[in-house]
Length: 265
Image (cartoon, rainbow, N blue to C red; front, side, top):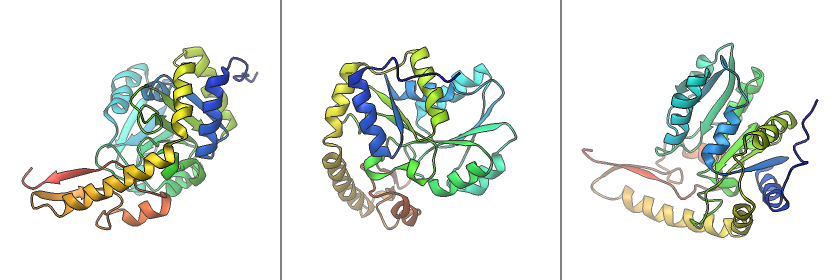
């Protein structure tokens, strides 16, 4: 019997969820109490013995959750460089159920070819999930490239004002939405109505904020690239960035995050 996850909703939360789903090009969104709560709910779809592939350069909280919490519950994890889809394909096992990536990654800004990843995974009936925190739906919409699930730490760009902690999951698959809806209500790690009100407020200025973040980041990146003590700068908006062409292809902007390497560091 299908679970009717719409019955127990809250109008304030649902207003934010509907807006975010529209921005991401999805059919259903879910608001959570944190990004880790959102990730926990996604991973809770799977059973002991299932295998999950993830990028080798993840937000520390995501890797800790996978390797020190869910691994103890019987899920199997491997971490690979998802810039190279041949490495991803080689790491797939008969029990692989999910491929989880960040793009750009935190903190070295590695990119994954999302369209290529989606085609590879769909051919093998494997779900794909993308942590889209760094780009927001303003600069990147993974669902439109074939990805199944998008996750956000809404504490960051979606919130934008340092006055809330929240997470979000968006999908355009009915089967995934049913599972996430059931788990969100059963596990209870959902966002409060007040935080959803603040998130709805923040979405109204997302475009303005992301444009300014990008403008500032590019100025900082150019300055650092010309600095005598800097070896290299990792920012997708620089022509010197190794995956600059991929960034232009799958992103409509380059975001506000960057990292750099000091000479002799």
